Image: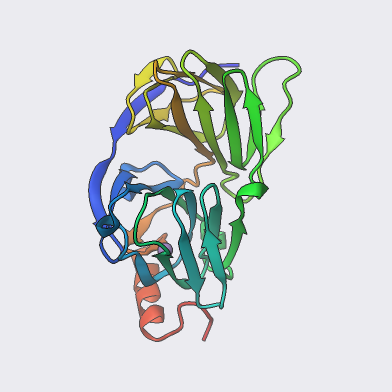
Length: 284
Ligand code: MN
């Protein structure tokens, strides 16, 4: 199995979004990391940085995946869904044709920490009905590995080595067949895992420094990996926690405008018109 090596290292930059939530944008659409459109990290113990939340807003054409590490957020959408996001929980939302929702903090003090990933949908799925899965922390399986543990949010965790058993997460399949792992390793621990050969793979060190594909990543750095079937991770001297993201590129044109991600400019205009006319979420 060929191990992936690092092609590019990206460092997140501070920005704000929603009602004025301070966050770090690690991946943005301009970077061309098909099918990954966006990765935001939020982490603050200062309520001013997050209380404004993300009031009612639309999405069309992709999926948003919110992974909470600390804090409590309430999600409500136009379909009447309400979902509580608590530490260790995930909301996997497929906007499809359209969703109008809010994501609001349910606390006025304490730490709020987590990630939101935007994953593109292929042209064939962009106008499908909206759907979402609220994954309680208990629904996300974890596996102990030497000197660490791996939580499997999506796809299959397949440790390298004879006799090592694979573990499937609650989300899988679709055109991008995503892999989403949260890997924690103590100082000195190493882990090798299989990654599908047709995936684009990213790794983001969010606690402590790590070694990814033989290269040191500081906390807050993301590695874009090159071709291969395996990924090798090691913890830095203080231990580490790394998000491992994999997905099949779509190879389709991407036109992004605010909360809409489509294939053509005409489709973006249509999305704006539909939203203004109250037809974003349901056909006329
Ligand atoms: Mn949203």
